Every structure is written in structure tokens, then in C-alpha cells.
Image (tube, rainbow, N blue to C red; front, side):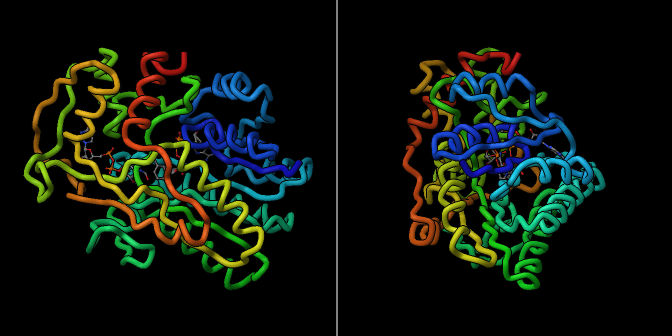
Length: 337
Ligand code: NAD
Ligand code: WQD
């Protein structure tokens, strides 16, 4: 069985990927410092798959531990999720964000190179496009990241591009995610934000279980169907499937490849609230508030390159996203405890 190192594998997207790796016949190995996740996730993965993933708790910046791990295991490829991801926090704490995201990535790439492991899938983000000049957004669109988090993603993309030019044995997939939502249909793993959620659907779902009173809708004066922001929400299972396809793709395609991972369909904030109410049967009170700094009106992907090159496209519709998100939230109202 091929061993795949999953950095950040105890996190939201990483944990779902570990499950999918088992299903695809790989052996996942997790490294996570648990700075934004809980160890109980490992038990939940075991409950779903019947297999207990090998788990190392350390920070990626600890090159010595990483080196030991690569000595102990024959790692075929790495999926690199580990990093900090809160946009607002990155504006307040740029040093912490650059240190974690850039130093973590450099430490990982250095140890990979040392052990001649040259296959990598990296979690990038649609936030590298900033305020898009047009939608849908193709991979060739201008890049104008507007905050330290997004810039850290772009910088890592650039490192990897340089690495592939200098060393042709590298095969790298940069996946630019749009807005991941929902959870595994078992209801056992899902997103469990620390403190008030920054993202829309986790916030709506916490209102749904009574943890919060109402949703603040950030702006109703955008140039969109109903004045609220429009985004490309993608089911985490579809997102994870793109990683499995990317692993297959880079096996045969050296160089650095960029793919959007989105559905190509945009929904507004009010459409999201309405769809959640239908799926959950719970009324969601909301209040119109002013725009959130840094937000754009509309953002959705052109996913056609992923379809032709990776043979991947999203299969879950909005109703499925809402159903699975609600199952996770209603069965785990306080998150992982
Ligand atoms: P997450 O916070 O749930 O998972 C990240 C995991 O990495 C956490 O378990 C955390 O403990 C771990 N981690 C952080 N820094 C680490 C370090 N230095 N060493 C070891 N472990 C470390 O986040 P997620 O939503 O699963 O996102 C995964 C990746 O996808 C991130 O790189 C994120 O930037 C990217 N991404 C996420 C979204 C999104 O909306 N969720 C969108 C685009 C891109
Ligand atoms: C979606 C829409 C808000 C919360 C962020 C990051 C991006 C990526 C995904 C990591 C917007 C509105 C939100 C709320 C609201 N992450 N909203 N009330 O901003 O598209 O993307 O997460 O890479 O980098 O920037 O997602 O879920 O925060 O917002 O009205 O309480 O919901 O204004 O229109 P966003 P989001």
C-alpha cells in the first residue's frame, strides 16, 4: 500500500481526505500539531474506516522530527494541508501567519527533497485571485491576494513553481479551493471552529442548533441577485475527491499544475440561509449588517480545466451540502467534545 503523508490530517479537510485515502487503497500517515484540531478526530476516522491512522503530533517546522518520519516510512507523496487559515486573524497577526505557513511549507519541502519524495498536492485557495476581474474565474486570471493569509498561499505556490523549474523530478498539484462546506455523511467528522465561526455555513448551523442567536448578513447592497455576497460552495467530499484525482495526475505529469476546485455555481448568503432552513426544518433569524472589510461581491470558479485534466467535477448539489452539514452539526451540537 502506498503511504501518503497528510499534513494537517486532523483538521477539517485533512480528516475527510484521510478517510478517502483509505477508500482509494492508500495508507495515510498524519502529522498535525493539533493547534486547530482535536485528537478525538483520530478515533472518529477509525470509527468510519475501521482502520486507525498512524498519527504524529508535532509542528511541521520541527525538521528533525519530520526527517525521522521520512526515515521510518516510505512516503510516496504528500498532501499538505497544515497551516493557519483565518483571513481576519492573518491581518492582525501577519508574523504568526507567515511563520507558520511559510516556515512550515519550507521545512516540509526541504525534508521531502532530502528523501527524494517529489510528489506533492498543496491546499491553495481562491483567495489568491482577490477581487476577481470577471467570473467565472479561470486559473489564468490575474492574482491579487489582498491579505497575509492569501499572500502566504500565493508565496507557497511560487516556491513550488520555482522548485519545479529547478528540479524537474518534482510533480506538484496546486489546488485552489473555493468555499468548502458540509461533512462526511456518517456525521462523525466535520468542521469544528474555535470560537465564533468566520465562515457562513458554520455560523448558520450554529444558529440552527441554538448556539448563536442570529446570522449577521454582511452587506445587502452588492451588485448581485439579492444584494448579498455570492460564493462557490463545494461539498468537502467533492473537494477531497479532487485530491485523489490530483495524486493520480501528478504520478504521470511532472511540473507544477494549477487547478480550481469549485462547482462553477454561485449562491448568495440569503440563498444559503433558505437552503439550510429547508434541509434542517429550522428557521434561521438573520439581520442585515454592513459589509465586512475585504469581501468581494461575487466569486465562483471556472472548473473546466479540472474536468478535462483531472477528470474531476463536483457531484454534490446544494441540498446535499446542507443535509450533510446539518447532520454533522445537529449530531455534534458542541463540536468535538
Ligand atoms: P484546519 O485548521 O481544520 O486544518 C489544518 C490543520 O493543520 C489543523 O488540524 C491544525 O492543527 C494543523 N496545523 C496548523 N499548523 C500546523 C503546523 N505548523 N504543523 C502541524 N500542523 C499544523 O483547516 P482546513 O479547513 O482543513 O484547511 C486545510 C487547508 O486548506 C489549509 O491549508 C487551508 O488554508 C486550506 N484552505 C481551506 C479553506 C477553507 O475554507 N476551509 C479554503 C481554501 C484553502
Ligand atoms: C461567504 C459569504 C460573507 C459570514 C473565506 C476566505 C477564503 C477561504 C474560504 C480559506 C460572504 C458572508 C459570512 C457571516 C455573512 N478560506 N457572510 N455572515 O469570505 O468567501 O472566504 O473562506 O482559504 O480564503 O476568505 O467565505 O464563509 O467567510 O463568507 O454574511 O457571518 O458569506 O460576507 O459573502 P469567504 P465566508
